[in-house]
Each structure stands twice: as structure tokens, then as C-alpha cells.
Image (cartoon, rainbow, N blue to C red; front, side, top):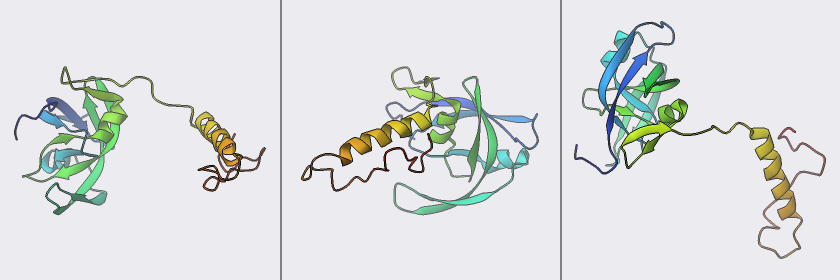
Length: 166
């Protein structure tokens, strides 16, 4: 694989959440924010007795579609851990740490240093965000007729939860 700008590799450990204790280290895993899931060699996942749970279809850059099994795993990287669904990679597949694992680890890519760094505080106030969004939508829906968004937005009645909670 050519040395792409911003591409780098790290060591990752994998553990079976059903049988904790045994871990396998995978060296030189490509950090790939363009891949949704992490791809781990099937023989490593099988050696840990990780169960194949779901079959996914993946479209490659050339348009071809691959089918691969996925299963649950603890993923350890950069001193952190997360639980994620990982792909049982085939012999010709790249070994990748994908975006979902990075998000679960609360890490982001620093493209200058080519390292994983803390992603900062995670969002926690979903109910408050929904209340703020609802208030914005109410304001937009009460604009005078003829304004651009007045026909597109229907807000819940004032005082109702609108299905969003408090």
C-alpha cells in the first residue's frame, strides 16, 4: 500500500467479551477513519472464540461487494478500551482500526503527528439538545407566511413533548 498522507499504523489488542482474559496483539494495524468497522484477521478472532454473529456486505472502492461476518470484541488501543463489532477479515483483506472503534475509544486522529489523541468530552445532554432543536423548530414554523422554511417545518404544540421527552 502506498504511503498516503495522514495514514499511520498502531498496535491493537483484541479480547473476547464472553471469555475475558486472553488477548491477542495485532501489530501495525492501519488507522482508517474511512472504514466504518475494524477489520481483524479471522484466525485471530477464531483463536479467541469470538462468535460470528452478523453477515455484512461491504462495497469496495472498485464497486465490488464483499460479504464478511462480524462479531463482538473488546478493542484495546492507545491505552483505552471499547466494545465493538469487528469484521472477520479474509487473508487478502487489510487489517484496519475503523471509525466506530475510534469513536468508542473516544480518540481522534491528529494528522500532523500521525497519532491518536483524546477526542475530548463526549456529548451527554441529548434531551437538552432535542429541547433546543424543538424550540428552534417552533420559532421557524411561526415565521410569517412566504418565508422559506415556514411550509417545511411542523412543530409540536407548545407544552407537548412531541415524542422527544422533557
